Image (cartoon, rainbow, N blue to C red; front, top):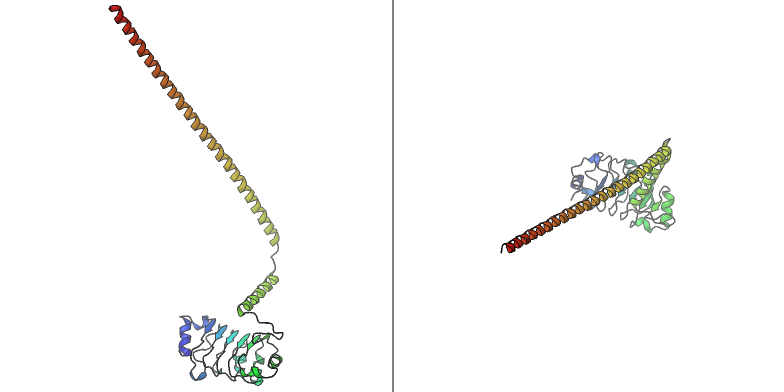
Length: 263
């Protein structure tokens, strides 16, 4: 797929001025030049054009906010002075796997004042004697070359580096702003109010428990009284039935006595 078509595909119905990251890896550059990328991508911070057969940066648009540029596995051999003109705020540049052979080619990167990390791995220049020392001396603004600093300490991941930068910015803003006057007093008052609310809620819960237990006791007492009342009623009914039976027996006995007298 040609680069111009790939850019349209990556936009996904977004306007170019809204895009902050653009990955065009493995597409095809016509005549080894950039196509479809223009100055309307003014918010672009990350651009990747790895393995696209790019040989020239002459048509690179002005991308003032671009911080990271991936150009690995292309056939770039020079013309790096364009980067300082078009992307003056670059902090990370990956040129590994290109056709860069000598220090004079890299010298053009001296004008990238914010450049911190440069990758020239798999370029012919790495075969030069004292390669690392020469690059660090030539580009004194960089911290990492091919992923390591001058003491061979490995560079942090780009995401971790971004997080650290963000944390530092946040800390600086907090230090500059500082807590507003009376902030600590308001916080203490809020804590006191919260403690009072908690104590009140605990007291309320205790009262509810006492009230609930009292109601339950009353219900149990009422049930016991009802049971006693029912039992008393049953006993009275049994006594009445027994008296009725005794009365009937006395009546029958009297009738039997009368019959005997008649005889």
